[in-house]
Image 1: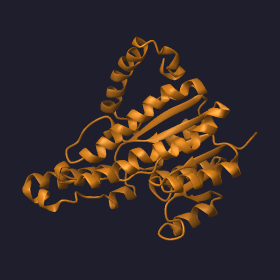
Image 2: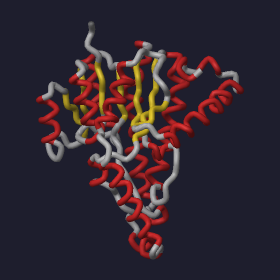
Image 3: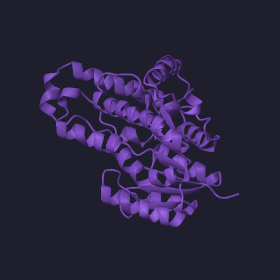
Image 4: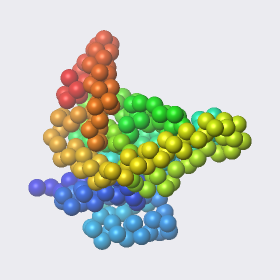
Length: 286
């Protein structure tokens, strides 16, 4: 049986690293991509290589970096079966206190980054008429929390790109799957980017304190969960038969978010049908 190949972006830590390791343990040929392979992420790169994983430098915010990584990976692997768009950053704080430049940086990684990576690898998938693209989103890709406006907006945008592509890629035999994790104790909590206009934060007075309260509760909730659950969910999607994968998977189970997904899905299907585009509906979504 031919060894299957997967690419995981943002694999230096968190869900990305766990997903790369879990896929490799399952027998996949894995390309773990990350920034700063020779410097700040050298330790992570070394550990992944010891597990038999190929590590490739890739910055999702750079055309040149993505193109170079794609050239390396496709020349070695020849084909890619699964692409996991995991790389992301988290900007949290009072929305007004983020300058437009800061908001652009959030979207550059979380939204434009996956679009850029897709453009590098989808042509080969379309040519083969098979493959799976996984997007690591969040439960806040379907709901809103105060002080999460910039981050949440990026995840809503990511989900819009992902779902749209699910219709456009279905005729080519390519599946799209969105994974929506809740709060987990990964490195993202230690890398949160706060609002960059401190004067605006001060102007909000006591309201800013609620942001700290939210962070504390999210942190406490995250400590109760094992991030391996998300990696396992991604690997299950990767191993599932083509055409059977659900569009959205919530981890862990969350009746509220699943209720939103279940309520919206039939409406979305009817919208697609109303335009006479039912031929674009993936089999698993019909």
